[in-house]
Length: 197
View (cartoon, rainbow, N blue to C red):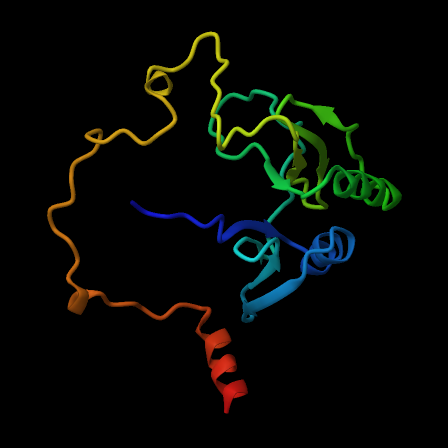
């Protein structure tokens, strides 16, 4: 079975990378660990954890999204509501709340969701973000819970993957046929090669 190790990166868009760096690196404290680009765009990565990053494309003609409160239903085409970043302790959550307020951004009160405590805010691009700390007495990863009064049919089958829902793979890519094509990030690996010399 495939073993996931986190979210490699979430990719958002901004028209102002400097403003975005000020918020994500300087206010929230996420290290800016990579950047690629050319005259058409920038693509920068902020470190969230050892396995997770938040990334931004800077496109000069992109416009801020319309501010929408977290979790409020909408109609029509829609794909993204908000992203929640986990923090280790409740002290971390309160420290973030104080920093965000001191910087003049709106931030919610600390909310108790039963299994997590959360605060909500928006970055300068109006991206809705949440910060959450696990409640110490509830471990959903060890003991999953479904409290939906009207659960979807697939949800009633339990928390673990169900086999037989999709066709089995019969044409595996042979090792000698696995080709990897060049991408924009090669400039970063070339720089690493130069540093090693």
